[in-house]
Length: 198
Image (tube, rainbow, N blue to C red; front, side, top):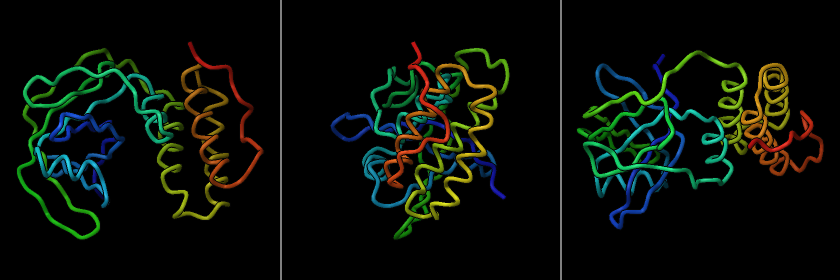
């Protein structure tokens, strides 16, 4: 089984426009592979400029936000490549694409790490953050999975939210619940709506 790191990947268009998206980086030896599905702005950007950055966000709302249409998050310039990365992250890495396996549905871009840096201490894992991550991924598969499976998994992840979430994790969860409920045509919520985080 592949080792996959869930990150926020950023690429730039030829015009310098930022595309920011959650992506699983597949580790293969010393390299990391991006495998976006067509069509994708990431593919267009990599074809024009074969560089990307990957950030580990400090706030799980970034991941939940991007999959629910909230893409305006602070970024800063990269160190070694033409690109930008999340401003608030535990760490980030910058990559150059050194090889491509073309595919009609899902090309694979092999990235060689050019630079990596840690920015904030990582003190430990939180179950609610992991639950938001899993729910965010689930929310991108609404057309692929049966509604019953989606709701069953959401109910399971809600246990960690109810027990260990802070305000940011609850807000992130609400965004995802809203997306899932709208897609499934439901008014019921797995968890009651929380007050927005500061």
